[in-house]
Length: 608
Image (tube, rainbow, N blue to C red; front, top):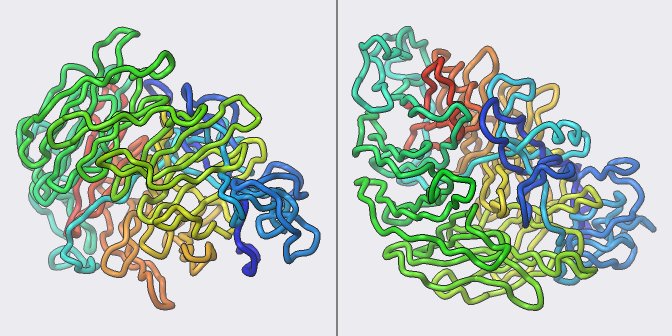
């Protein structure tokens, strides 16, 4: 439900991000958007008190009595809806300095009148979702207090839009080949690339392919993993290779045929962090553990060329001060700068040479960097004055090359910046745990507030949490272009919807229902279309759809109908990475179960 149109937004909307259920094996997933496992905390991991929902306050009524300050946090004058304080003009302070809105204690929806951003450490989080479990398992960021109970049980959420090079062409839907059922050659199979169909262990997923179904171009089996499970983070697609990290390995395959592009790289210890982004010349950086003991740290850096597999420079991340360890780190790329985030600081390197550029450390009286977001811009979030009455969060844009601060926005007390749904334009998600409210805010290039989402809805993107950092870019199932934010609603008793939000006003432009009863999640925009993934059901496979972003018709059109033969695999991925590049769809698991009884799949590629 849209908020009053005539007042600037000011406090959080409704709904709480939903957590994913815990993985069947291995360490519990990290927090994301949601209740229980709190989202990226500024300190230790998430499983703390349940987090507020993506909006609906847990007080009387979704928009009860105006009692809560919003992210921009200061009261203003009564709004257009009489005496009721609220996002649009009540007497309650909002995230940017305005009262809660006409709907009561909802901080978040509201254009603050002062640059004061929400600021309590630790936002809600959601653990990785799973395949066939009662919660349908994908990480999700549910925006609604009603899901708080689920969040308490669950864990983390989402993926990322990735660069693709499609020459500006729109993907075109259509049946595969001649549209007839065919039995084509089995796709290239084993994880080591040694076979291409026909062996006892090879599976011909294209046998008996139905008219209109996509081909399985190739699939890969996962490497052996410990019985406790292992992470398989990151998936990068270039014009030639599809690259995946899994446990201690980085593997690469030809995008069209699945044959090994280069010999798998095996690192000394398990991979513990990767750059979600790649450089313009297709380089990434991965981090691996320093050993296997309880004292081991995630501090060994390795640069890798995605197209050749060549190992570049290496470095060891130093610890910071007493409580600023490299036990866990987050990696972000912005231009030629690699930012390594620790729990209370960051160190920047030249990604081309490994040369250290600068440190982003404590500033002011007590502002400690708690997370970084890379991409076209470098964004930093800091927790300030922890434990003091003036406790708050601040968000900054940094010059990637020098670390110079371009601008700073201060959030009001009690608000925590948990995620960035987009870096350019910058769209930040914040929560107020005490008030059980959320806020989505868009910023102009100079750091001033452009708008805040004014849609009363239970949104549910998929977001992964961080351990000691915020994991600001850990969300999938959300997309944006220069003027519009695309958010999925929670799946309830029927199809969910994608809501297009005008970034200039925060108001809803349009919404469209999923073509099935399963969740439809935005992936990226290209060629005048929003490309979305429709998740599989217990009985059927998923699909990739295109939705026109302009005009009045927004009916999803199938770009790729995934085959029934791989529906079980698709649905079994506990948590997943997905991408659509050059008319091909890629899906991979981000968590290995370590189950020796079955050979689990790592990655699949589909096309026509």
